[in-house]
Image 1 (cartoon, rainbow, N blue to C red):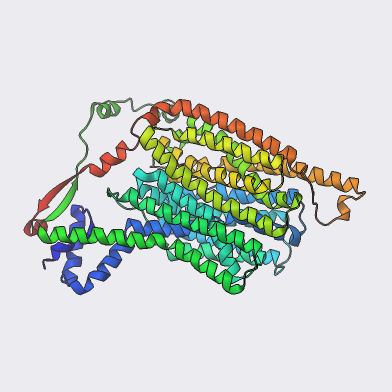
Image 2 (image 1 turned 90 degrees about the vertical axis):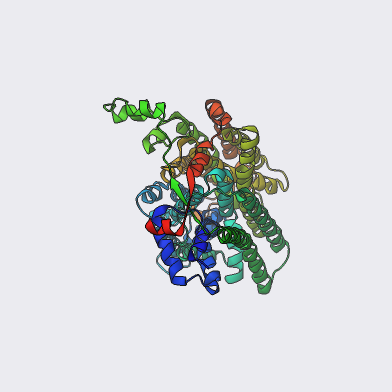
Length: 602
């Protein structure tokens, strides 16, 4: 068989790549015996395997959501009060959301380097925390613990930047569904790692910190060369594959929810924990099976087409013809100052903004306010869920159920906001900022359920808050990519979430932690005790968090109102075809049949 018959296996090729492919086909001599190996290499270098690797990395990048499980160990082992623990939680959120460094690093370095840096930070931060909690090293100062957890949590930004940004650029027309899936796996991360630590270490919360230290780092190292930006090729079955991923991940989430509840009401043996962890991992690998099947079908189709037509099709990038708008842009006064360019000569929405143009825009300011209010309040609830359950008299097993429910419904919120907002946008031009408004209003309900608790209402509150919290991040990341373009997306989406740690510090440390400690001291005074008489400052009763969560609900409602302003500002933009540019870029290729002799000449 002619060696050129295999060129179709490599997809759409540019002329400079032809010589490399010719060399590769000459070496293997067209031998059919090496075809499985060639397919394997083609698959692991392709977009779909890169996407699967991103799924696994994101599934290990949600360690910050397990803070509610192991925070009690830190509090009791190191003798912290609630304000100090909330301060630790703030630095955890600060590290998790200040991803500017990873974004800027991604602008000047390859993806593999970003992932390796993240793996090193993850292991260093959480391993030292584990050594501190287990007493293997001297008790660190509070500022040192804050630094350790900030470093460990900051590592997830490197995983986000490496996996999420690369995948969005590889599948730009499905970015809503893409971000929803990737952030959905992060939302499931807490429940998945809980199953793994129960199987490996047993019911030991201190060992959970150790697992958080080594597992995410190992995933990044294993797939460090797999995740990279590739040429966008339109695939008619792309959306179908994403819906298959959606179904498989929903099955995984439902399994985790059922097994988590089951483990709280029944006693599990070591074999039972091993079995649940094995099933979780098996379900996690289901998308890989469909990706292999999809790529194999494309491989067979290209091979058949090339055997029937021995000519080689080479694509040539043809630059779009100059437009009058482009000529006018070239005739602009070159003496316009950079300051005027930032504030008065911004691109249209959807075009590529510079970093300063985006950060200093009104749209980004509104997103900042909405994120400050919504994410700040939601993270405060997530970080305090363990103490909330304790104050309302729930047993320890039930409190862990609340944390697991938060993680699982966090996942449902992420995929819902990703897929549902994408579907509404494509079919009905439903603006994504309006979806954010509705999510923030839903969050207000969950916060009020904690402020005014009823029997078992914390189950509903954890579901509502987990869902609304999960829905906010994919919406924020997708809106930023749509309004400001993808050129500097790795930096812009990390800058956009800076509002979250700032909101958490104000709402969690300065308000919630302070009000909780005040109520706890009042309880001590009623019993004739002082702070020096007790090791741990604890408040019991529905009054402990009432005033704090009323304030949080009001702040979140203000965030919903502010997002409505963005809805009004962007309504015309979302009525248009926001993905037109990416379709045109993918279709700006002219196929030219070239014979073997022509190819040799080239």
